[in-house]
Image (tube, rainbow, N blue to C red; front, side, top):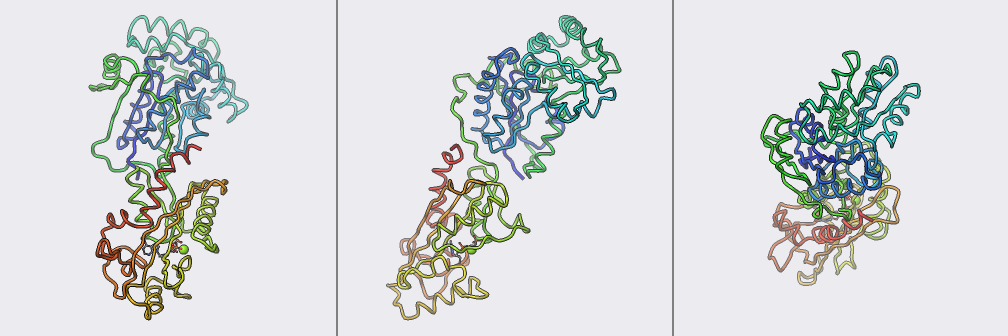
Length: 476
Ligand SMILES: O=c1nc[nH]c2c1ncn2[C@H]1C[C@H](O)[C@@H](COP(=O)(O)OP(=O)(O)OP(=O)(O)O)O1
Ligand SMILES: [Mg+2]
């Protein structure tokens, strides 16, 4: 389960037709919408400019830690979907492909009409998407530059709208299409008028509604759905007039909608990093995974572990150093899972034992090793060493890896110093914790709460270093 919001963007209020559908199909999801009414319409603008505006809106939503992005705008989907998908690590859903699929499901005579903005028609995105699925389909696209302004001025029910729609669709009527894609999220607001002009034998496709079905499927696939949410978030932002937005939105949605104004100069122009929503912690050690998960929880990042991928073969820890082993594990599992992976290699170094057990900490007791056997061996090795000479260090090396790029791992190292005591104390933590005494705190690691341990431990130290650098690493 993932409680982060889903972000929706559009050039104006039209994208709300997608939000309305999302509220219906996905009532438990937290939702944030941003409409760029100040720069509307997008349709006539060059694709490069639409792409730049879209990135600004996306950055605004990324700063709000969205788990998925829905481009509820056909023009922006045509101009920016590929770029967004390439650069973001969250799933990005556009409206064109779902609409194209639905049109192919609906058509019987194989002739599909598309009405959209100039930008979408120019990109030929629908025809390309439809023909990539069925090369025999005939697609005729027409721009309807007057439809968006009618909807944005809340005139959808007026006589003006009736006239604009009737005139705009005349050429479409004579073609013999049996399916018409409303390739702009504003158009479903004109649906009764469009249906009336086209006649009862033409099926209208609402790309936005189809898109929400795809969102729902992806939430399940990526395990991102919010299943329990008694008080879901609904946040509406516009770059235009908040009161205009509220009037139209309240009218469409049949309830009072509150909107916040975002000025364009507040929209970030530089790319805000996109933290992945899920990181796989490549460890079989439940104690470690717990400690790492607490830290990521605070950042709104969900953690999976190797326990979630039981069929995965183990990576062997054949390195001579913590760093080598951490990299081996991170690279190996990132490759196998094709996901960003974080690995920890850690252990205990005892001065009086020349740094042993070190990288051998987990298998110190040899065959059939476990925490109890390892601790027993440690204590027996130290039986001749006086209490005040049992200086020891916990070390944790974390490696963060991206699939296919083992040379670019982000590697950090954390350490904490203490003493090994002869009598174990405390039940918290794991591994050597009951024997690792911190003089400054007057207790062993196992006597600390999880929070206290994270504040002083080698792993907490390493995680804080990771947190300081991973923004840049994910950007780079
Ligand atoms: O905070 C700690 N408190 C107590 N003991 C600790 C800690 N941190 C590491 N240790 C010990 C446990 C294990 O004996 C060895 C790690 O070995 P290491 O190979 O990195 O981990 P592991 O085999 O338990 O799990 P995995 O490799 O699947 O991540 O050092
Ligand atoms: Mg291990």
